Length: 112
Image (cartoon, rainbow, N blue to C red; front, side):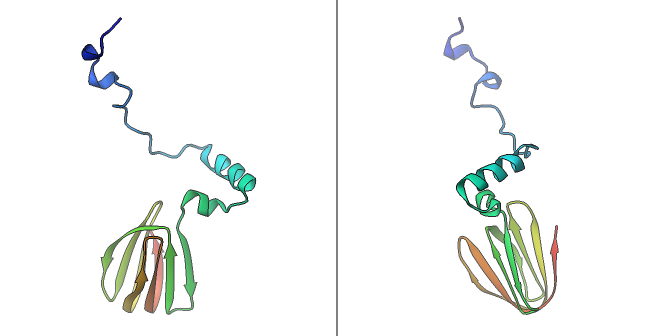
C-alpha cells in the first residue's frame, strides 16, 4: 500500500486535465434534458443567442467578453464562437453580464 506522500503528481486524481472537447453524446443529453425540463437547449447550454433588428441593431445574449471595440468593428467572444459585427458608427448601446446590444450602420455579421 502506498502512502499519500509517495504518490506522484501525475497520478493524483485532481491532476488530470479536464476534457474540454465536447463528446458526441452531449447534444443527445442536452436534447433529452431540455425536453424533460421544458427548457430550450440553447438556454441549457448557454449558447449565444443573437437577434438582429434590421441593419441598425444587433443583440447578443450569453457572451463571454468584448475582444475589440471600434466604430467599424466589434468583436465578441461567446462560449462557442467569435462574432464580428462590421459597419460604421458602431456603438455598444448597453452591456450586462448576460447580454449586450450594438447599434449603428451594420453592414455584416460574421461568425469565426
